[in-house]
Length: 417
Image 1 (tube, one colour):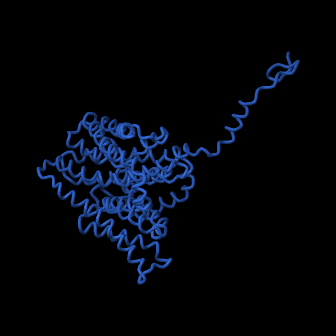
Image 2 (spheres, helix red, strand yellow; image 1 turned 180 degrees about the horizontal axis):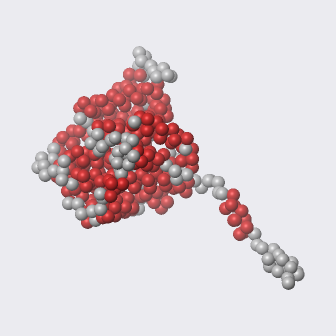
Image 3 (cartoon, helix red, strand yellow; image 1 turned 45 degrees about the vertical axis):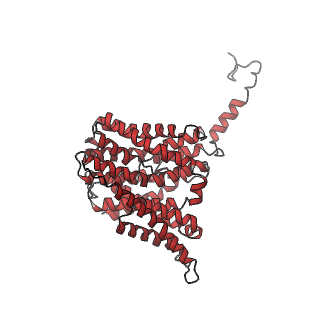
């Protein structure tokens, strides 16, 4: 039933996609709501549980694909030439978001400090997929799109060591294995750079050449090889994915151009499938298990944590107020937080279920809010956007003074009594 449900919802999403690009209607929200309605505790059409392998697998594959395609938009030259703003968001914004979220979790939701820091790390990463209209709109200033793209592509991997560190503290483990964490990140980075660099070098030799038909599959092959090697060596898959995409963008512009549209379609399919399955985990009973302080925490985590953190990070940055406001608002929680939340759920710590409930609630609210406001904010940057006809008529009417009343008539144009 999962395949049938996904195919049916996908068809509906395709048919309304043009409308979604012009309005607050969101295909991401459509799949999330569809999963909710088809879930085991609502209609029972889909039989998935939080500990099902399909949930974890889809979430990991979707996040890997999204980071891989995101990396292809940002070459190393781009990172070096425009690192100032992303550096502020990552160097100051990420840890401040983590800490503010942890404080809210402790004092509002009532979690212990270890669990609060853990949920702060889980919810710190951002996902530009749910703000696609903003990131992909050329009317939006390039530096803002670049900032959100680079930040979201890197902060997933940066947050993972903190998730594992605080998870170890929450379990009471004395050995935090920091050396293993460093090795995992290093291995992921090496794989992400070496595999695409070697593939591109081979294609440039006189013995190898990709035909027009198979050229888009070059990126697929590289991505799958990076994924397989990362799993085999226990390297950080998400850092490897972004590094691989960025390496292709730097050294293989032809390979990037061939893969771009195909890759975005593949990552979009995986993202939507993961959203459908994730939505199936949510139900009225699931939401009812969350106390009112938990709801207050989720709202504050979205409306307070990142805006305050980035307001501090961008002090004297030169970023225009409108751009800064957009960056502060668009901190949507996505697949990284889903994956990390599932890791916590499977960890067996005492507060695992409570942490997962709060994470899931925050993600759901974030998806509904951010994916339905991206078009509105993106249009605000379009200074050449056509104004509605009624607005032009109203403006002309206000600008033209009323003619003086003719003798023998009143101000309403009628004859006096």
